[in-house]
Length: 259
Image (cartoon, rainbow, N blue to C red; front, top):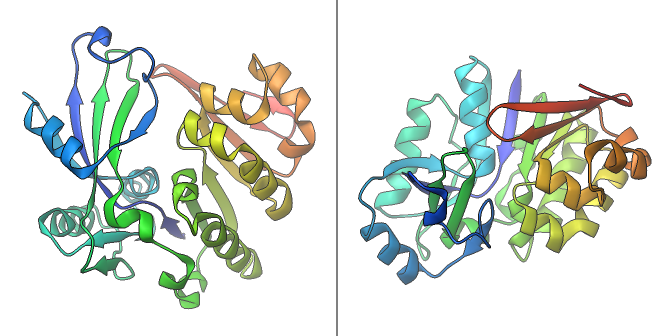
């Protein structure tokens, strides 16, 4: 299997919190866009932190690589210290980075990730160069001979995001590969719900990944069975829908059944 992952190339600065009340309850499980100055200030205040390459698609690429599958990741980074860290650590995870885009005019994106005791992530993100990735950065040759593609929903925040996703998925379908998308964040789904649903219906996306809040936002239900029935037509075009429900378990919807 050779899977292409496309997403925001962002360095994650992870901090595990002892108490959930250390995070504003209005933002638990969500992502906020912040300035470069703000995120640098907050990082300096951390007593514990771990720096790793991040971004929804890149995390998934590293995970699949650990299963000894061939993976390639495309994102945009700055020509700076964090950009070098990003490339070096991806290579350590055996993620192919030959098609990564290095922008000499922008800085590498950063995300401060607070992890609360329940395993929920709350993020403050400075997108940096990652937000400037567009369809022209990805050569058509990248879609040749791959088994499928995984794209993160966060790409929609980019001015050219919808075009990038649409063209990438179309190129993969032309080459008979599978298509997968992650919902990424509940605020992302709230903002781009129509775009997500149109992509699902028009491109016949095979796999959707998201947590409970994201699925409820996308399909408009108060519980997963009701949500499934309300949007059965949209679900029908997908082979599988992975539904993460906290750190303990998740469910999968496939061919009309929930597991």
